[in-house]
Length: 275
Image (cartoon, one colour):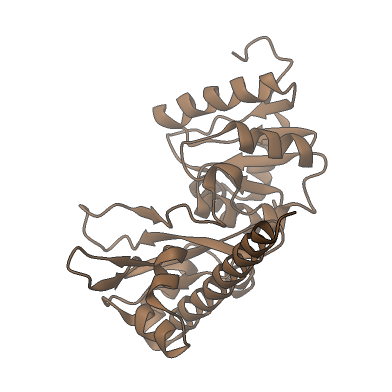
């Protein structure tokens, strides 16, 4: 190795360590805000979904203030540079040079890698918010976050998925399934499933249980997932939920036993009806 290569590797390592550190502090900021008086509206919403404090803590859920620069000021006070915040994807610079927080007035879902390092964030508006806002936004890809190479919840599911793993679409699907005892659930960040994610699944489990939303988009997406799993010769089952609902709605309405029955009666990869 040349000296310049060594310096480059050290610089890259320091950069990655900085991103891990800043994301850890960001998650603490959002978690503390959720648990404070100004986060009550978001905490009440999570409680209405049936989540308990243990599951909220396990997933490090948080809430972003409805302010332009609350996180920015917090991180500046902790000694972080604005350029570091921008590199982490949690601060955005405007054309006039001014900066603002990416996430405002949103539920926050920290995204962790398999080593439990926080590598990014997802944010969801509350149901009471304006309909013209995107329901979900995510941290853009960074040096430590490559969404195509990660699965949400795998850090918690990896010790429960040797025999099978439940693949769903969204953050709340994973969290609600874990709440009801299905700790082998992971999500693929919406309707996008990559070869890298398929390869990850092939290395951590024997069988994938596909449970997408039961609307047309979800079922079309399920077929795309099946094709990638077939290419890896990975066993799979597919669950079709009734009434165009998502997994978290189904299990909250019907309970764990009904969901378990769906798994037991799911169509398998050796079923001729799977295409």
